[in-house]
Every structure is written in structure tokens, then in C-alpha cells.
Image 1: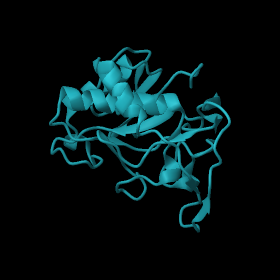
Image 2: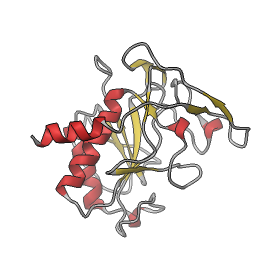
Image 3: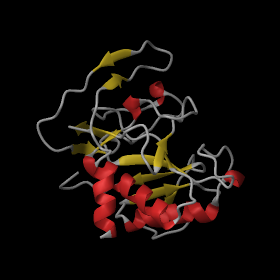
Image 4: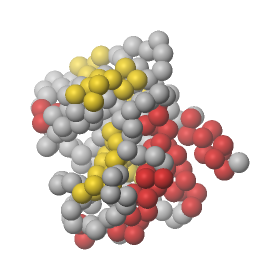
Length: 215
């Protein structure tokens, strides 16, 4: 019953919409609609060399989550930075909903970059360090909860609520993530083949789903 309720509520927030075409940092903003697809979303190629077919846009916010723009350092994240497969959005919604049901006092889940509307390169020209992966709709950045409960990215490891961060890692592992990349300074743990330490991840975890049917 609980699982059915979560799935029903999550599905209601995953309608696709038009996106703004991504431009190099500081470049002009042009509006280009993403045409509706003729079939289910598909992750093509590899996370670091791939494309997204019939992607779905994560809404700017939901009942249990908010989005965060890592370049502008504010909510919500820009629309062209939050596209993924239907399955990725479903997992994000599920984790956010189950976390809220288990701990109603928890702050909303803070979700960062997914992929561009059609996937492809998401490097430095799009701001900050850029992403080597995030190219085919199976990757998402999720910010660790802060000790002060504010819905903002942590700016230093001491601001991270490590117990809540570990809970978040555990939830994505249980949801079937292929990898969960975590920071070097937080001591977060999990199955060795899944939870892996990676530089530049002390404020967020990076979840990647397995490729496959129903992507």
C-alpha cells in the first residue's frame, strides 16, 4: 500500500515540458522547445559519451524535493540542467518521498544537475567544473542534508549532517543504483562496488543508474 501510494504521488509530478537551450556561460539565452518523443525515454551510449532520447524534465520542485543550481548557487536549478530518463526521475521521486514519510521533519531533498535535454557533453562550457558524465540521463547529483536544516548546498564538510548523508547513500543503494559517488572527507560507506569515493563530492553525492530496459 505504501509503495503504491509513493509511486502514484511521484508519477503525478513527472510531466515533461519545454526547455531553454543551454548556452555557454555568459552567452545569450534562446528558447528552443524540446519536441515530444514518440516512445519511452532511452539512455543511449555511455554516461561519459552518450545521448538522451525522449528525455523527461524533472520539475523545478516537488512536495518532497527542491532543485539547486550549482553554478548560480540558488534554487531552482535552470530547466535545461534537469533532464533524465523516466526511470531516473522515478528513483529520485521515490527516495525523496520515502525519506519524507520516514522523517516528516527532514528538509526537502535537494537535487542538482541531471542531464541536458538531449544529453551529450556537459563540460566546463556549461559552468563550473562541468561534468565528464551526466550525458545519457542516468546520472543525478543530490546534495547532502545540512546540519542546520537549510535547503542549501553545504559549502564545507563540517556543515553536512553525516548521519542524514549516510541515510541518503543507503537509500540510493537500496533503490538499485549502479554507483553512488561520495566525497573524500565525510566517511560515507556502502557496498564497495557501488559506493565509491571521488574528489569534488564533499557537498553532494552522484547517483548513477544501470543502463537497461525501462531506462
